Image (tube, rainbow, N blue to C red; front, side, top):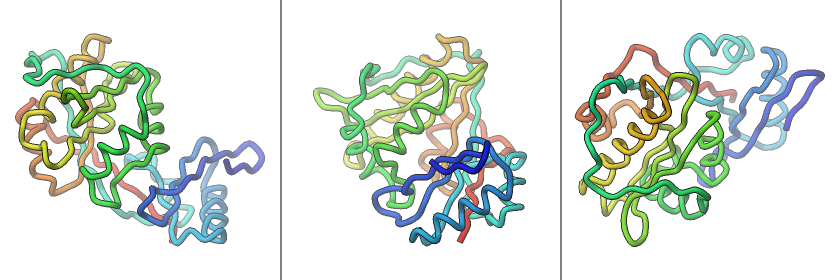
Length: 222
């Protein structure tokens, strides 16, 4: 935790594979963000990255000296439309074993985009209500973290281990996540993915998602 007066931010390692700091601002302005970046650099972090931010929230970071880095595409799906049933069994995990979830996540992503247990917990706690859904029997081969805001659902994370991809598990997780959010009153579902991830984009398009103009971007202090 980093503090200065009423300003507050939380910093943690980016993940187990990337020697970089992740900084989440709770309260504060550009001056505080700049000081956080400088302090984390002085402690040995080669760079400090923001969470994915929409353009309207990036102003204080840019003013503090953080520069645009990776971008993420955003997709939306209207939940008033019919949601097909999942063709693979899924179940909600009430008390996730975060290390087991990380073990599923790790092989599904390149090092930069992996989430360790702390990052997975952050994704889970990003919304007031959330669930972890798994698929595969007897042992899970994939998972999704889905959250609920006021009127929107958020597919925060989805992964299937590489040797079981293409077997319908990812599609089942998407459908189960849509159904979970719709049952709780969400009107639409949002998710983001890396540009150029054609397999993911095709899956989401097949399941009724449309890419929207809004883009999320990470900002880096280096």
